[in-house]
Length: 372
Image (tube, rainbow, N blue to C red; front, side):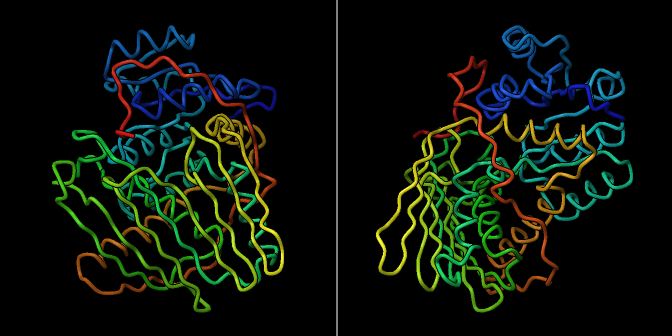
């Protein structure tokens, strides 16, 4: 679908769950310079009625009318915020209709499905971007810049913890819906370390625990992962659906180290600590901000100016390759080797965009996934 440079990109948000109502829809109120929210898609009529009124959206569609919407000429792009198992099907159908796709992570539930999405994007010319909001967040980009500048020497290892106490019955605890801590939050750790090391791990080894309580009867409750990279570099992380809320990473080099607290969050301040040999620790404070408006603005800019987005389909595929290797390691109880690939694009500070934190939005028929 051709887009004139003077036009705004017209979006439909597909799926009106927690992330859509608390972050995506408010993000559109801060991306109006080049983006316009014109349609909502949901199977909940009450959500459609109340949220379309709240955000002044003219068109609403049930899932059964999704195809009708795609060919209506009303929209240029969709923001897919559905459960993980629905990403591939809805994205492919949109791209086949000539509609561009900004899709929440994980891009799909398998490498094969993600590759199909990438192939459809290439064939149709519809842009496909994986919604890695932290590729535009200054605290994360500042940490990557410091590490890549050599200010902490040669980076040797990365360690991260990401945990939350997911509520029983939440979609994240459903295996058929693509739940589990690795797909939902562990993917942030994987994507972060690839930003610092610039490549896939050569080998992974992982343990998982399932059945801690009723929340983890279908999906793992916790995973512990070790990743070996070229040059003897190492990375580790633990992700959990039952631990007290934590979201931080450490990057350690030969002459210094970095620590980012609240590293993966979108609702709180972030603090970056930068330490070097024989130098006082520097502390950078980043006030909470809207992280969804910036990725919408960026994607719209790519569409208007016919540019390929940086967190593209390949980024989504690579993280899924690591996830599948981790799950294979858990099953086999031994290390798993990954196929070597050439280096890919990674975010830099030039991509940093900031929008102020949004006010608490109206929510309809939805609750927070975490008990924290």
